[in-house]
Length: 229
Image 1 (cartoon, helix red, strand yellow):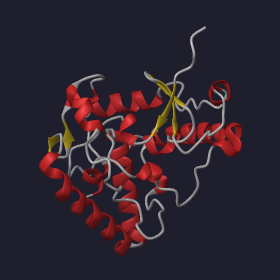
Image 2 (tube, one colour):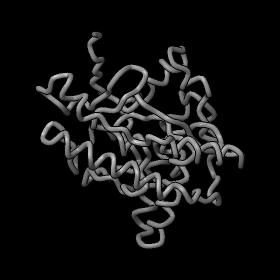
Image 3 (cartoon, helix red, strand yellow):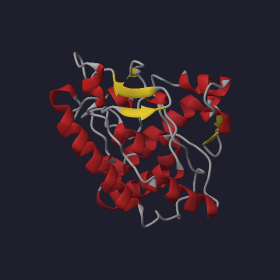
């Protein structure tokens, strides 16, 4: 019997879906996104219950909020919608998010592994084992998420956060085995970690929604800063 591969994830670049063209603000979220959020959040709650004190995620912990990662079209649309809703109730907070995002883009543009005008990443960055993937894994690992409030350490678009954010912490399986946050599951044995595995989207509803968006011409990959700038 082969040992279980458990990875301690130190940056969010270890996972990543895809993005959206910058400035595409009129596109609406597909109706199924609400159901997807419910499925993923329920899976997280179940994994958290099984994990108990091994899962140390808490408000104000920003371990997973530093370092850029790829987001897909659905994530980007959700973030934009969340920002639009925030603008309606608290325009000053929304403006601060946009300002931080624009500052982030200015810092990152020179070495951005894609088109800094549109915010679309090179397709190769998600090719497992490629040189482009390795470069992206080393890109901007000290950059704080522009949606993170620098004073409170809280996400200002928490309800609209990307899927990577919703699944970071509990054990989640990928090609490299089970990945867990480096701060969590200290002292737990491999079989105990496996028993807490989070299966976020068993019927791949996310993939179906993304396919629908691609048929509408929405494709590509980006990062959070470009989605909310």
